Amino acid sequence: MTRLLQTLGLVAGGLVALSASQAVAAEATTADTVVELFTSQGCSSCPPADRLAGELIARKNIVVLSLPVDYWDYLGWKDTFAQHQFSERQRSYSLTRGDGQVYTPQMVVNGLQHAVGSEPDSIEAAITSTNSALSGRRVPLTLVTGGDGVTIDIGAAPAGSTGLKANVMLADFKSSADVSIKHGENGGRQVTYFHIVRDLHSVGAWTGQPMSIHVSSAEMTKGGSDGCAVLLQQGNSGAILAAAQVESW
Image (cartoon, rainbow, N blue to C red; front, side, top):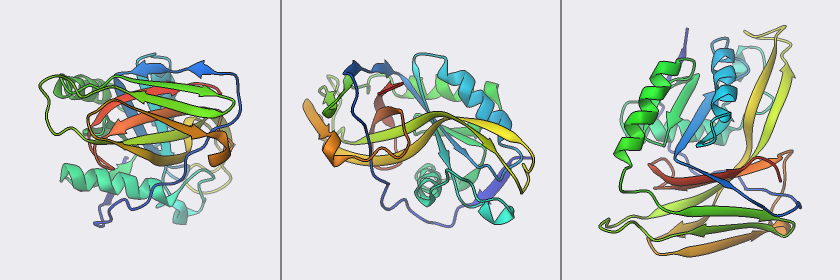
């Protein structure tokens, strides 16, 4: 059964730091859909959603990010990737939507809608619906990584749009990891996780005008990651207007 946690009214405060590493320069692939999976190693309902995340990654037009939460750690197993900031981000989404729905496994699509993370049909419906809702609000964005850091170029707001502002969010992720879970609801199982976010941070504010942001490798820490994504998001938990990712540094 999907685990449900009613929102406690906590708003996502600070989000954790970004990272990168030295590598050969590479240009990211852009995406028109962002799927965030809120998952936990301590939740027996989550492994099917974790597998689905791996399947979605194969689609080139989707950025998939797994954000492990910490609120099920008390059940007997402390999630080895969980960060409290991800729990706060999930709660902030529920407050922005106004529905109070916080549970695992939960997928949030384009920052706008949520669905049970193990239900492919529900996820597809949310992708179709949110992409339609964002029609006319999309913003050009490119991401290039190199030995000296990352460069993010963002275009102007689309013609006819007004008042579009957004945060530039940079996430680094570990492409995949196998975890042998010793205790709790998944005790004795080995589960594979995909695109596990290690750091997520706002690196700038976009006000509708073209801009370029460079974040040097000296300013960043890696945290075991080997890929990164950038999201152009209204507020900390609103619509995602653009996204791009690099699968490996």
